[in-house]
Length: 98
Image (cartoon, rainbow, N blue to C red; front, side):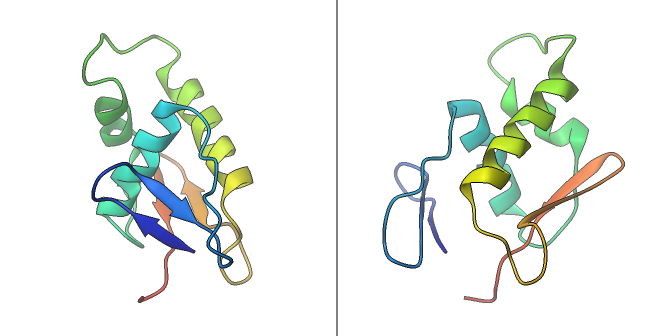
């Protein structure tokens, strides 16, 4: 899995195919997680980044779960688990050293 962050955000599979990341907001969530590889990112930080141009909706945290679910379906697993892990109040994107 290769992520491109300069220019349009893209993810490429091991075969080089572009991965459909879903909605623009799901891409924003992925972009923020990519800024903090393998580190836990607070849900509040992800919400602020995802809705920075608009008022944060009441259902923001539920919407965030939906975007993470979209990304989990789009991105291949990492090792023996999900590429995006969750714990109460935070998410992290697992990536390799490369």
